[in-house]
Amino acid sequence: MAGTDEGGPAAGGKTLAVIAQEAGVSVSTVSKVLHNRSDVAARTRAKVQRLLAQHGYPGRNGPAATALAPGGLIDFVINELDGPWAVELIRGAEEALDAVGMGLVVSAAHGRGSSARRWLDSLAARRTLGAILVVPELDQDQHRELRALGIPFALIAPVDEPPAGVPWVGATNWPGGLAATRHLVRLGHRRIAVIGGPPHRLASRARVDGYRSALEEAGLPFDPGLVRYGDFTNEPAYRHALDLLRLPDPPTAVFAGSDQQALSTYRAAATLGLRVPADVSVVGFDDLPFADWVTPRLTTVRTPLAEMAALAAGMVLRLLGGGQPAGTRVEVASELVVRDSSGPPPAR
Image 1 (cartoon, helix red, strand yellow):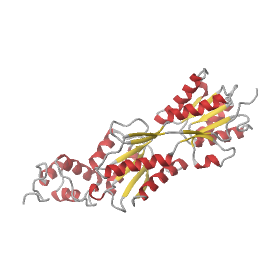
Image 2 (cartoon, rainbow, N blue to C red; image 1 turned 180 degrees about the vertical axis):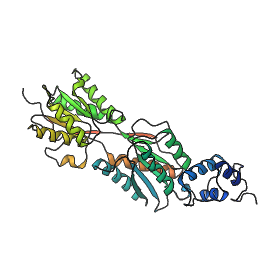
Image 3 (cartoon, rainbow, N blue to C red; image 1 turned 90 degrees about the vertical axis):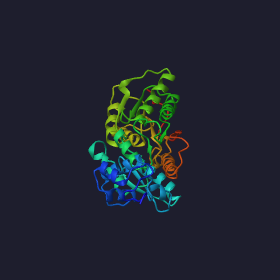
Image 4 (spheres, rainbow, N blue to C red; image 1 turned 30 degrees about the horizontal axis):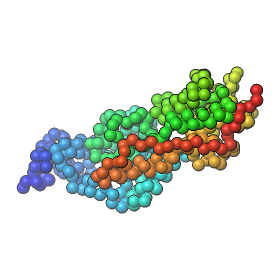
């Protein structure tokens, strides 16, 4: 009979038998994918779904049909699960989804290369409704596969600006770097070092560019010898801070690209018998919960991580509901929070 799943014409005119032949699978496998059955390998499912979409099959019981049903699950994929930065993002996404009766599945992407694509296979296997991605990169193949799987997604703090139309949420990193360095300049500092994150990351480059702009604005020279790049975590920042503070003419202030790097600078200063801020001022970035509890309390640039994750979750929910986000590029304002770790430079 025309219109049956076992071989009748689809909305686009192709029968399941023809699609099965194109995919190199059985008609029953195509039918399983069409009906959202779980017993199909992820790569096979992606290939069949792509052909079904191309030929006009809407799918009866696909993600769109149950998109906003209570109990649905959204995946949260993040490069690394350790550290308070990840916790804040996960908290924001979980709270936003819990408010609409949906749950969050958290997994780690574990870097780049072949091991990194496991998260994509996992999304396909779980038949996830949508995904929030905090991954080191989203290449064209991964982007196409997500589209083929019909998984709506949004990115948080992407390494580089994504292609047009891909929804993402970031922070105003350049203004944050500018504000942090301006603060130190106004306190009287003239030799200000910066410890950035990975130079290939958009956020890291923007923060260092803000630092450079503040120096230029104040008529201060940019000294490449006062610039270091790490990975936003503790150990590399500790080594960089030791190196900077041991210079013959050391900086009187350090702008750290993350709060974790700022704490590493605290430790390096203590190792050398220096006091914060009496001997060296320190400014961080993120305003993680511990920033208000360390001694001295950390001056830092507040990045509303939980809010960013909640906005990304909202983008995914809107896509699931058949709508479009109000904007595909959202930058949340950062704000300087002045506490006790910054003060005037020491007399020399």
